[in-house]
Image 1 (cartoon, rainbow, N blue to C red):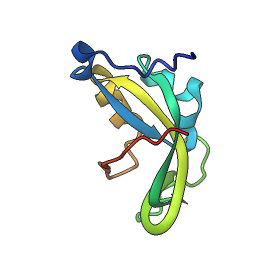
Image 2 (image 1 turned 180 degrees about the vertical axis):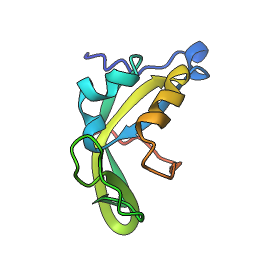
Image 3 (image 1 turned 135 degrees about the vertical axis):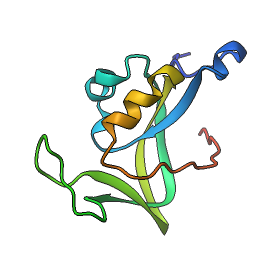
Length: 114
């Protein structure tokens, strides 16, 4: 049985959170720059959202001068990404690296395995 590193022991549940990543945070190298505790869990789908680039202020990335990936509610659509388990001590660095995204979406979700 393959271990994804996502099994959470009871004592660790309060110290970690699950983070749905899309855009550049799909890449292991990118997420680990500021979030060294990130552990890959699984590929996931965010239902009733769509991927968009840019934001309401028209901001672009200062690094590569293109639109910044974001998600918006959109019934019937879906965004594919990955879920990382991250230590809560990395939450501020995650927020800082996503500073151009002005929202945090909390989704209630279920895991379906085939």
